[in-house]
Image (cartoon, rainbow, N blue to C red; front, side, top):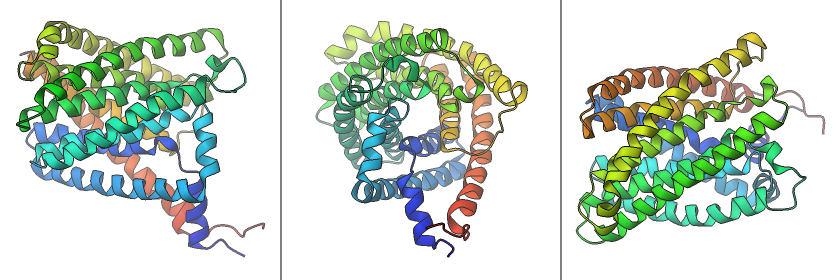
Length: 352
């Protein structure tokens, strides 16, 4: 008999990609970017999509945790997939930042608190279970672009804390401490992750099927580091901010330059994978790992250009924003088509 809609939905939930919250991250950051550019109607539309996506994904993740706990545990033990869980933290923070721009600082504070708890928990659990656990050695052979999402989660906490700080009357010093600490942790995590991924690329055979979309997160992690750094520089005087303001401001420009340098290399890698080696380009959830870095790079450029009076950086960010929006629309249409074919339409007869 053909599978029912409930059966198809249950199968989709069981196989839900841990990194699907990259959809929330990508949509939220584009909503932030269009708000900064004054395109309010589009920004509000993107915010609505972001909220709906966040609520739906939280519900599906809870369903998966209750009904398919074994599948989630297997993901946590798999170093190729486990770091995708950090998209939950980054998604909450990006949504929180955007809601704060509309005056909903209470929602920002709640999402930040949840994100910090998740960041601390997963920050120790994922490396222990996925990297230091009883996996076949060498674990380095499984390093991939998803590992950079750990960095993104850390920097998203910094960005959310820095954006909330001007809106509160109490707790500003604590938010400043959180922002600087999580930003600094993210910088060191990027260095460590970059070494691991670089060694994997150099020491082990790399086929076109291995060069997956999450490698774009290497650029997105730098971009959110730039944005978080720019927000920290603008924070009110506090001991932690005063001690690091000059260092963070300088490093933000350096990281933006390196993120810019990475883009042609990532485009060339995609050309090699899909054009030279003819790997079919079809929808997969990890494509949102391309959209988010593009959007984050745009917003980082817009914000850094305004904060440090760098008109070239600002212009590059504005142009990139529309590129990211175009890619977002293409991936969204592809996702809706994929969900229609795989979940909503009747499937093939079940063999059970």
